[in-house]
Length: 107
Image (cartoon, rainbow, N blue to C red; front, side):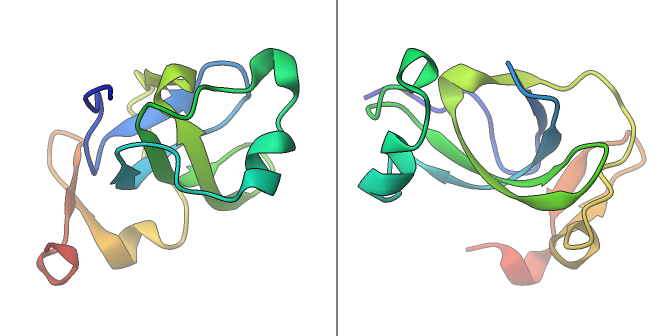
């Protein structure tokens, strides 16, 4: 099993698709449905034995929740705030631009 490279509150972007988001949860390995996994084109289908991240995601057209494998994420160097409407409910933005989970959402 691979160790998670990203943490909750980090802003990341997808390696291939034009979206970015804030991590709000991490699964140590794949924990979605088999149908979801098989819907990914085989040539870019990720391995299941790696961390998968739940993101408050956004692209130029919409906001949504995404589930992305570690191999398909990169750090986001943009620095712009993430505009997903749930961000303010779950996170506070720090003066340096990073995000910290609000205390009521911490375990």
